[in-house]
Length: 112
Image 1 (cartoon, rainbow, N blue to C red):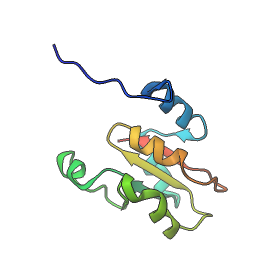
Image 2 (image 1 turned 135 degrees about the horizontal axis):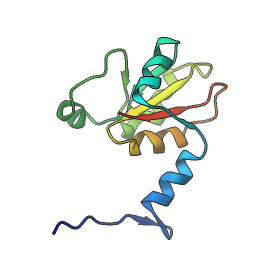
Image 3 (image 1 turned 30 degrees about the vertical axis):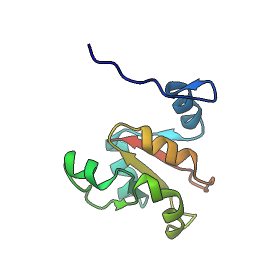
Image 4 (image 1 turned 120 degrees about the horizontal axis):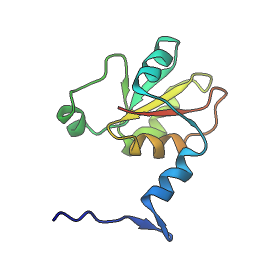
């Protein structure tokens, strides 16, 4: 029987933290994220390099800013540009999107 640790921060479980993080932006499907990119959004893959290699490599057309550096690297993207963050399961991208300053188009995230 495998046991998974339950992350608890300030009395909140990870599910509660994710719900709080996701309350401030739109969640997209992978198909919607691709369509947004075709319409001019910047797709940012926040997976670390080893996870990208493990799960199919780079996403064509996406910029790669690992979660550990994503928020400060996003200064390279115009504030008028829609940003869609993506990762493997949607956890990292959700927390990164929640940390972004509000832009006119607003951030989005998509589990990959």
